[in-house]
Image (tube, rainbow, N blue to C red):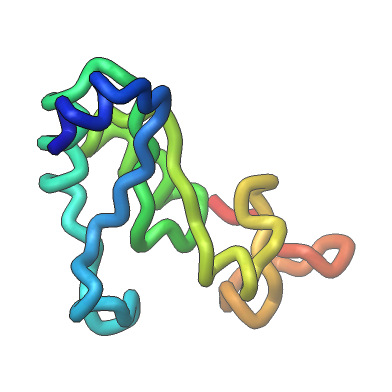
Length: 105
């Protein structure tokens, strides 16, 4: 199927690391090994999705999967500044507040 997508002209593939029946990201972790296998099977850029909650997850996912980028959905609803490297007070505890944002490490 992946090769069919490439041959049909797909230029970028986004892969979510959980099955539909394991939708709850708090209960089920995304399977980054499967995303890595998809990346290794195609020549086009791949973006990973699933369990991206802070910038450390971005870095870890890129390293573990070899993908060109990551996506996040639910976390961005809680923390729109995720990719800017900041967290809301509700999202992270134990950090010093600065300008109503928390630097994420």
